[in-house]
Image 1 (spheres, rainbow, N blue to C red):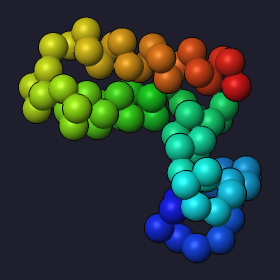
Image 2: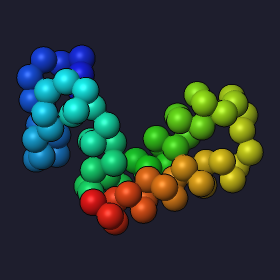
Image 3: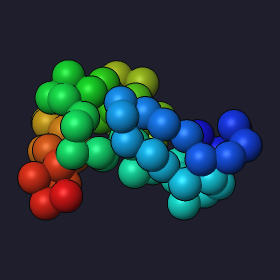
Length: 71
């Protein structure tokens, strides 16, 4: 969201301008399991390998799901 100036509205929730508003939408309490799976896939393929082991996806997806419950 840092690429758009000003605060942004996503799924009925406002996020602040700039870097502070960039990551919270990804781990928002309204994010779905499929969103967590999608993000986990993108992160693991970027930071681990193009064809990483399946448990790498599950670990990251689990972290995102736990952050959803905590938020």
